[in-house]
Length: 74
Image (cartoon, rainbow, N blue to C red; front, side):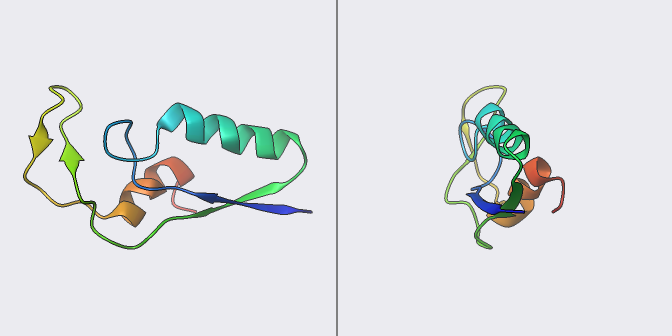
């Protein structure tokens, strides 16, 4: 089975990988008979956004941990 790498960067349209784009990419790979392999950098996000207000937040999040939300920990 072919493997296709997907590079994710966090989770969230304003401060990471956009969920719809990521999920549809994973679905297309699976439907075409390949295995998706997700990767993400293990580093702090440069910006964190409150998705309710659109305002920047003064907190730190890890890109790899946030991307695992989309990859379901894989």
